[in-house]
Length: 238
Length: 306
Ligand SMILES: Nc1ncnc2c1ncn2[C@@H]1O[C@H](COP(=O)(O)OP(=O)(O)OP(=O)(O)O)[C@@H](O)[C@H]1O
Ligand SMILES: [Mg+2]
Image (cartoon, rainbow over all chains, first blue to last red; front, side):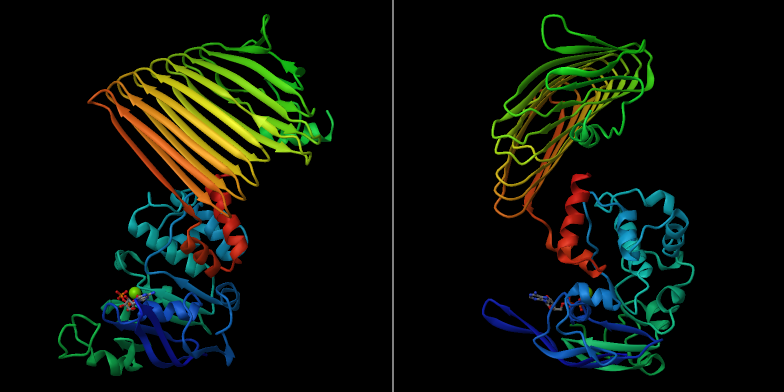
């Protein structure tokens, strides 16, 4: 169980305090797939980065199985079983796809293991493992590899930030399998996409840094605007 | 050959034992071992120090090793090596120099190389530089490489400075004829108060000649690196120069890429980026479980391709 308690995050912008997350309280139980949605700029990515330790909250606590992660570094959290697939993946000059997959698994993979991982995201291993993870790959390819790295970590808490952005979801064999096949594991996906929302167990809606609505999919989905998914029905844009 | 020789050979030429085929191993200005074959002949020069390497036309999938070892402090070695590669060849030339200096006097090796590449030949040339030993004496390497490429030839030049070279000034001059392809990859690591300067002059003389120069440098400590390139397009040609530097500590990298399209048909591009190791790359690797140190090492290792 992952708990977020009274969490707030603000930054100083030219001497003015800008509140990005306000008093967030959430709990995520094992075995469930959570989808966080909300307008652009509502704080979704920031929340995931705080769970991973990339950003530090000003107030509040993040607990995993009652143990506080708050004072742990990114590395320590990774070792504790937290993983993240970024909305904007990082590229590297000189590091190959296979080098990165080896790090994620903490050992060197053979070709068939790499095939298994990359085929989950619709890529053929032999075409990619020796390529450098740099800007010569297409945006969609980079995004898929980012996802593959996260999946191969076999993490206890998997954070996916808009995993579907820029890729054609239908080319995936089984979406549900990708985000929720692991038992005793917490999966949190940030998404605007109806398809992803439809496979959620629970949905959390953020607006201007606050949780405005959360609960089982069956309850929350009907409240959401059918088109945007990022806001409640009847609400005006912005 | 003693332990130091073996260590140097392994570092600069990936050799664990005497190679097969043609080779010339030079140590402290003298020949340690040599083998000449019918296809790749190695002939010592008569009037000066060095060798002529003659590769017969049509020789394919063969390699020649010509490593140089220097283990004496205060020794200055100057050598002239000339390569004559026939037409339609496909060969790999592995050069490289390792200096071990445990003394307080400077050791220096200057290799002056010329390459005459025949029509439609493909040559891969790998040159690794390495220094070891903790004497005060410097380990200095100042190579000059001149490459003359005939029609349709291709040269893939990999130049690596692994570590331990106190000072280097390396100059490379290339002339390309019609339909030639030149690909230069340079990876240099400097630490402490080391200095490395590389200079390239590439003349795209032939129609449809093409060159790509990619320099990756990592500078640590107080070291300084300079990258100077001059690509001149005198015909319908294409040139791309890229210089990327990662700085650590108080190091500096200076990049001066010059491109000069003397022909309107020439298309020349240069890109240069110098800066700290990218924070987001370090963070990404940390999210995969590496420590900050491990992440930095991994990024540098990949970037330098060592
Ligand atoms: N370091 C920072 N300095 C200033 N503003 C920041 C900083 N980090 C985040 N923000 C702001 O916080 C808000 C939330 O950003 P965040 O990236 O979390 O949004 P998001 O919900 O993921 O949006 P999107 O759907 O566009 O990805 C944005 O307005 C953003 O500009
Ligand atoms: Mg976001």
